[in-house]
Length: 108
Picture 1 (cartoon, helix red, strand yellow):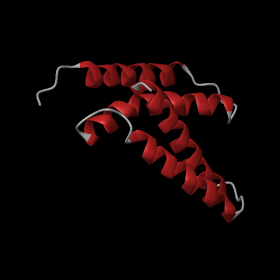
Picture 2 (picture 1 turned 90 degrees about the vertical axis):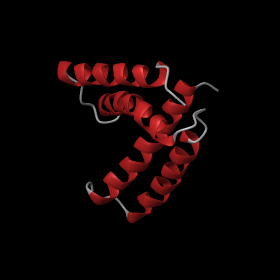
Picture 3 (picture 1 turned 135 degrees about the vertical axis):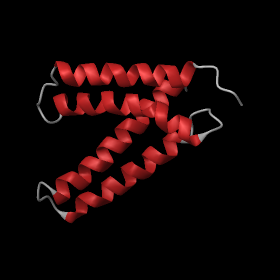
């Protein structure tokens, strides 16, 4: 599986996990929402370790752009709020950063 696919799966786990806690603590849902939230966050962490890289920090930094994009898609599809041009501009900037981090010739 390629890096992008792992990043997308990690983002899904992180967003679902964090949203479960949001639902519990901010939307008044049952505390039982924490259980799938914890499972999703564990999946997020495990999936992110599957990315081929020697430095964890670089993986986390590159992942950030995919997470931002995934969060805007969640905002739109799950919460019904269409991202505006500023959201898309910020996402574009972060994705450029992701590309630079992933494809630059780093010194080892």
